[in-house]
Structure formats: C-alpha cells, structure tokens
Image 1 (cartoon, rainbow, N blue to C red):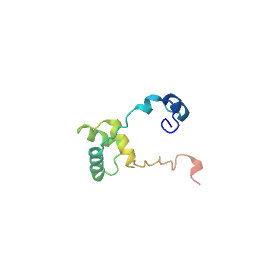
Image 2 (image 1 turned 45 degrees about the horizontal axis):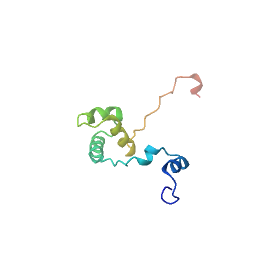
Image 3 (image 1 turned 180 degrees about the vertical axis):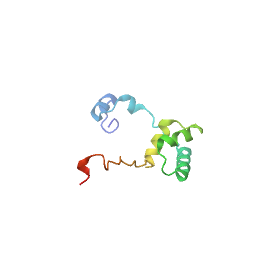
Image 4 (image 1 turned 90 degrees about the vertical axis):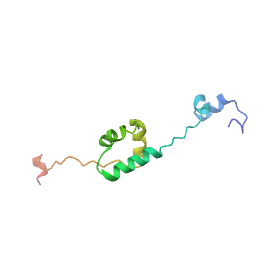
Length: 95
C-alpha cells in the first residue's frame, strides 16, 4: 500500500490494522530442525508420552519449553487423553 498508493506508512498501517513496529520489524526465520529431530526420536521410542514427560527429556540438550511446545503442536504430536471411566458411578447409568 505504501508503494502502490504512495501513502505514508502511518496511514497505510492504520488502514491495514497493523502497528508501525510490526510493519518495520524484520521477519525472523527459525531453524527448528534440531528440535524436530529430537522430538521425532523421542516420540518414536515413547509414542504415548505427552508433552509433560517429553519436555524434561529435551531440557538437557538445551531446548526451551516454549520453543519445544510450539514445534510439538506444529508436528501434530498431541496425545489424545482417555476420558474418565464413569461406569457404575451413578445408578442412572446402569440401564
């Protein structure tokens, strides 16, 4: 918008709903290959472990919790949790 319509940055950011700091900030590309490799190796050995058990094992190589969880979710490694067994708790359920 700034180049095409020759608008000032302030007006273009207001029209686009961006802050000027976001407009000027450089894009950071993260290299997460080492985290991905460590996560996949751990999950291959322990497929039913959730992130709570996975993170202490990855803390030793120096991967932060936020970074590891971001990659964990991006890879779709979230483990489905079983619900509570409610059979027999209520007399209504014994139909």
